[in-house]
Length: 573
Ligand code: HEM
Image 1 (cartoon, rainbow, N blue to C red):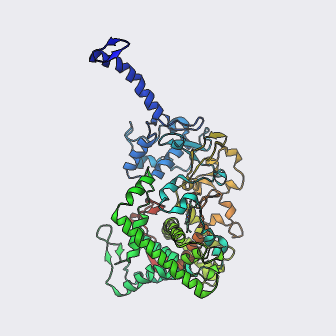
Image 2: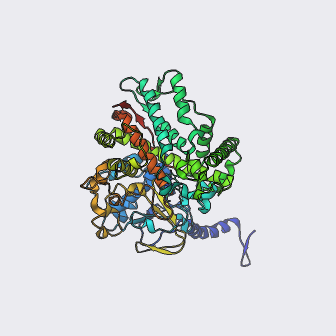
């Protein structure tokens, strides 16, 4: 029998005494476990749960086939347009009005939305414990370039790639603008192959038929990384020339043609490896540890590593045979990596292998998916396609092979504008995060060390500047140059001044590559890839609009935002 202060207690007395204790203790423990908001920054105050914070509502949303970005963007707009009080109640499923997540996403579609008076460019969401639990969302674009250069949180998901961890990106010089300058042979070869492949497909298509373009675009970008090493498009072209006819897709629509495709083992292994990045795992290190026991993961990793090492060996031999160290002589991106600072032997093999893998993870899907969105946007905008064709033809690019200099903004401003407009609207990277490395102040609010700042890049690129800024009165004339009501539309013209000259300075709120010290390091290469692919494709084909019932803006999220369908119907001009 338990004894308190010398008194023996029966079990019923124990229970009676324990109950009030538990009554106070349990809520106290739960409140300790509930994430603590930062003062002065709106949060969903009645919707916080121990440890998971906003996670319960966010999880329910995900269950309804939405993405985490749609949840974040919805909550941000709720605070931005309805204020701190109403905003904190938004996004609750199964409430009294019983609305679905998809219905709620339409709440902020109206063109005449007014920014709430209380909005100061920030709100917060919470998942977990401690300072790291707070995701302070910042919509003021002026903050990002100056934000802490610490790791972005998502980086832990890339730990299988060692150089992500400590940011020793030795291959940096390979993609710097001056390295990209003067070269686009690899890009041109891949773009020519894509055009060749699509000509073959077009020959086999009947009126009104179309095909899915995503994987062709991915193959083209992969061939740029490895040149003749991967050889995906040339192999596909060979097999398509000799194999049987395509078939209509029985599960989607008889209009969708499926072409027989049997990519090589490397394709499957690379895809397998990249698909195992634990991007959405709450415990990426544990996920990576567990993965290492899976036979398929080990097989894929071994194959890809061996392949990359083989390519490095061949590229080294090519470099030595060439006897020069000039980047523009390189055959593919692996050669570029080898030519770091002009020194063939600067990096060891495992170092190079890991950097090439990093290229695959960060550079392939992002660029390929941006192109997929681009094809959709162009197919919906016949006038843009015609203007582009005129510009490229007037520049003489129909008659002769293009060079790097032919694609400069001064020579073909409409192409530059189109590529930038596609990047702005593709929303390839939904957002980026930074972790404060010390106590700091952002937009006048105290941010403790360890707090995550999240910048919703895609949302920022389509909302009026004065809605996003910490102080709407501080939005200057230049910032306000893009009328808010048009920002969801695809209009390459917004990047051109009255003389038709491309002006990148108007696009302050378009940050597809992020900004600052940890911004994308492949930006110059990605833009070159995009422009080459768009130019070659536009010179060869008019993209017929896809009927609305087969087209959609729905997407899936992984490393980047991938359209659920990206049908194309290329028609030779
Ligand atoms: C359209 C194509 C691309 C888009 C939209 C894109 C976008 C981005 C974004 C938003 C980030 C995060 C930056 C940040 O946290 O502030 C990033 C990082 C990065 N990107 Fe790209 N990227 C693209 C293509 C490429 C290519 C082709 C490469 C390869 C050379 C590449 C390599 C990287 C690397 C290594 C990082 C990490 C940089 C760091 O953490 O310091 N990206 N990219």
